[in-house]
Amino acid sequence: GGKGAGDYSVVNAKEAERRRKHQVSNGEIKSKLTLENLSELVKKKEPHFTHMNVAAAWHTMARLGKNTAREPGARPRDPELINLLARRGVDVAGELDPQGVSNIMWALATMQEQGQGELVAALSHRGNELMQDFNSQNIANTLWALAKLGLSGQSVLLISALVRRGREIATSFIPQEIANTLHALSKMGITWAKDLVSAMARAGRVTAHEFHPLELANT
Image (cartoon, rainbow, N blue to C red; front, side):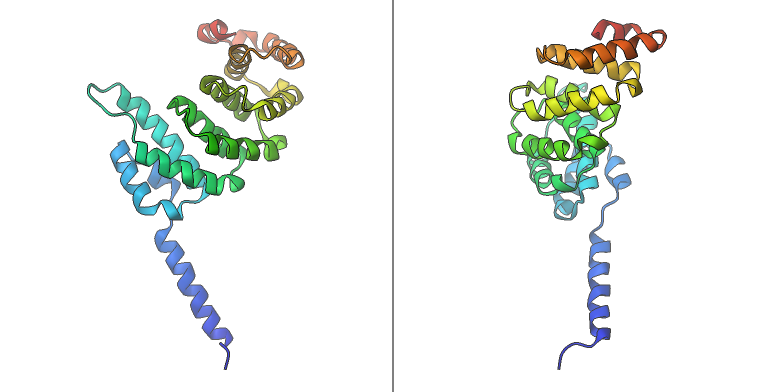
């Protein structure tokens, strides 16, 4: 005899309960106040992390690392935590949305993590797939990250796609995003993106009264 429909519903209910037990909320990740606390959570539940959990954990790790770096004698970096999240990031990269891609790129650059080639390649591939959904913030943050990590050589396809998309939606860029985009292009020595620079300059003229002194210094 095979299983009856009732048996399957019991199995499904058990599976749903097991998943629910292991589920991690982004709120739980973002509420961690130290790298140690974050590390404990990741080491315990990392196999169950969704793509959203992974992006939140990278973002939180970078933010906590920045704060910790200011404390005397602090260790702002946890290599085991980084490797766990990098591996999981590669696993779930195909499910990320544009915000997730740009958040992890931002985190890598903020932490100056230059040895994560496999993760950057997976993020770049996913970024290319999703490019039509990238908004001005995603574009500016990703270009800033690539410039900070010195990845202009390895990320030519992604940069080309970002430049093309940036040109399409140039009028939606706010001053901070214009400043970050132009600064990134300049830092990477990209001279072929004249159309985007012109579009940014036009958008910049429209919003010139909103620029702050630091943003002006970046452009």
